Amino acid sequence: MATAKKAPAKTATAAKAPATKAAAPAKKRTPNAAFMKALTPSPALAAVVGSAPLPRTEIISKLWVYIKANNLQDAANKRNINADAKLKELFGKPQVSMFELAGLIGKHVK
Image (cartoon, one colour):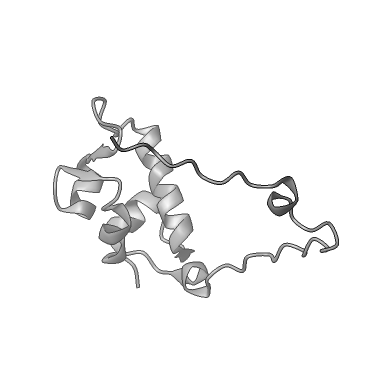
């Protein structure tokens, strides 16, 4: 008969962090410059987000605004986006996953 071994009990002093250490100030995260670079959209993408140069993050945000405004998310699976005429030209297929979105957009920016 095998019996389970009990783990040794931890002492209260070992579990507590030393009170003498001062809390280090949290470092502010710096944004990656590659994401903040303004990119010019292709004519197909400009039909959805506008023709002004935008950072990649803003392009994705404006694309989601367009998707939500036109009710293009699949009702059964919200992770899928049903393409209308403008997005079909952009994506090249009738339905895409939200995870494919950034990769497909990368082909339409300079």
